[in-house]
Image 1 (cartoon, rainbow, N blue to C red):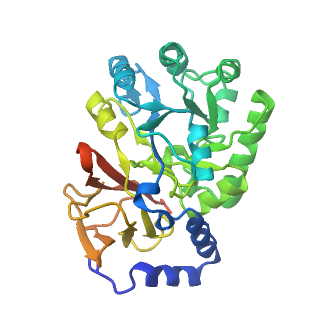
Image 2: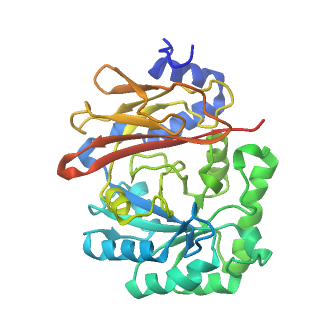
Image 3: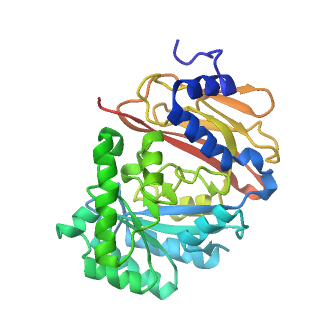
Length: 360
């Protein structure tokens, strides 16, 4: 029965999933290495990662920020007490379990649209702000209109801009077979080596879509971390192959939202179910998590699903275990659940996950 409590919850359900699949077991063991349950709440280092695509391209409002919005973001950065860091340095701190400054943020830009080069980069360069550009190599190879060229990308690299991968053709990864998935990584890495002299260590999943299989393929391809497009504050207890980013566009690109997210804190959780966020069976999924100790009172925790207008029903099991009851299945394609908790100083804790229901 959908939306009802099922007895096989929490660690019992996790154990059943592990028995069914060796891959699930391997992924579970790998997440234990980075489990926030091993960290007290006051030992967690975190950073907010922002995601942009286009700049001043008002024909594409869902992926564009207006230039007045972007300039407002830069002004907020200069006065808001943020520490803008190269993304690679944040990931290095996570891997080494090192501390990060309060309000550490990173700027990322997807797809290498020409508007980055012509409009945003001059402003970022003037402000001295580091950023990482995620590139899908096929568009650059094809000299597709509206995209940057390899020579322009080399100029960015020479100026210290970080480069990450978005595969070759930027496909919906959960829809492709294993051979195609592996080929997307190997082919794009070969093109990066040929044109830039290196293969990126950081990956942004195209459209933010990934599951257990995609994470394992990314790890096997040599990446050290990978990002989705789900809201949340990244921290050193996260799965490094399922890191969140806050997306900015015309609708969700006001300076108030930038400030709200930039001041965000992590909501560290463990024992997250389901193990695989690509939904091929049980839909809606049995979504649950345990909040780590040291976070404070949890009475005002709320979760919101993209397929329903109001807050989702949240069932508390014991002191820190929560399970979300969804009213209806997720539709084919991308869906999200975001959970928030008010913290001290009028700041908010965030935890989110993106799910994907394949077409077939």
